[in-house]
Image 1 (cartoon, rainbow, N blue to C red):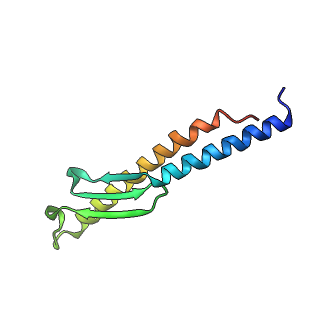
Image 2 (cartoon, rainbow, N blue to C red):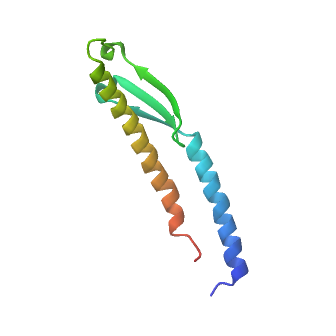
Image 3 (cartoon, helix red, strand yellow):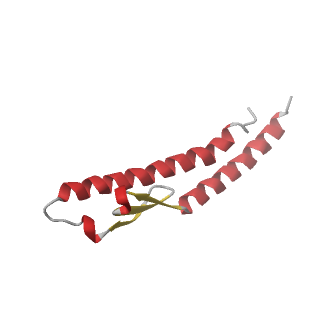
Length: 99
């Protein structure tokens, strides 16, 4: 059985690794796209919006609803990518806990 001091050292090491991975994830950009890539959005890994880009074909003053729907679709796509990357990155630590 591991002694308490070794467990604490291992936990501190894992904490540093976790913080490093979180920082790397926060610096990563994720781009979400709507259907036909008419709307694209970019977020950082810590879910900060960087940009929203619209293709000219989607900008129609008579059909604002489509633009709104495509924007929401692109945002949700990017956020899903971030959630998946977070699960993949942080989930790796779950099995390594010393307790």
